[in-house]
Length: 121
Image (tube, rainbow, N blue to C red; front, side):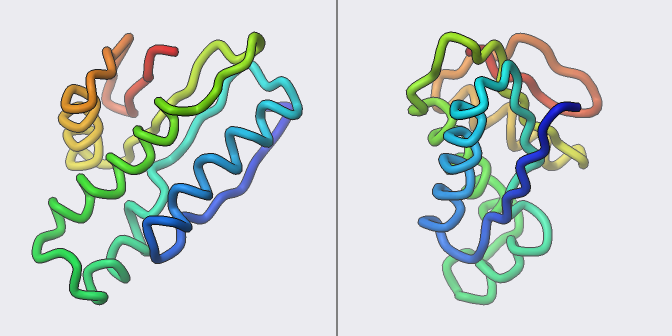
C-alpha cells in the first residue's frame, strides 16, 4: 500500500458526502490507481443518525449511508489513472445494502465475494 487516506463520515449527510469526495480528490491529486472505502458512517456513526430521529430502523439508516457513498463515487469526475473504486463490506447486512443500492442507482457490479463489492469504473 503506497497511500492511506483516512476519512470519517461524521453525523450528517453533508459531512458524509464530503468525506467520500475529499478522499477521491486526494486520490486524484496523487494519481492513485485504486481507492478502497470501508462503508463510512455505517458503523459507529450510523447510530448517531438514528438518535437524531431521522430513521426508524437500522436497515434504512444503512441503506441511506450506502446510497450517499455510492452516489458520490458515481458522480466523481474520474481521472485517467483511476482504474477501480472498491467498497468494502464487513457484514452480510452491509454487503446486501451495497448490492441493493448499487442496483437501484444503476451501478453494475464487476465482482463480489464475501468481503465486499467492487464498483465498475
